[in-house]
Length: 122
Image: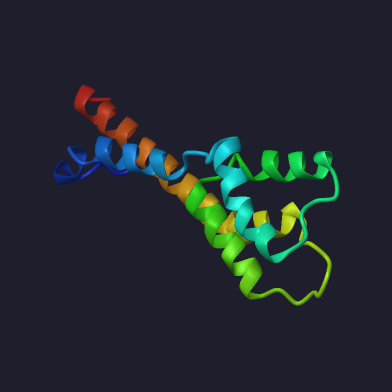
């Protein structure tokens, strides 16, 4: 059985959940397109529309700050001369932080549920 949520924490849970949800908001297609401009200023653009669409669809589901940070890391650590990176390289750089944010949100939601159950006496 989960521990009771401290009384002093209960009032802060809704705001923390809202903040956690906002930190996971996807950047969307337009946001990804803007963020990809930085990458394409360093590396050659995808050779065709399909590749460009795959890049955009892949990155659009992640928060803008994580995508931007991952792209900056990729640019800073590049070791290739002519080959463009692949979307999976960017995702690999942001995956841990994205997972951590999701875990934090789930923990907060569990705390809120526990606090609700405690208030009902169950």
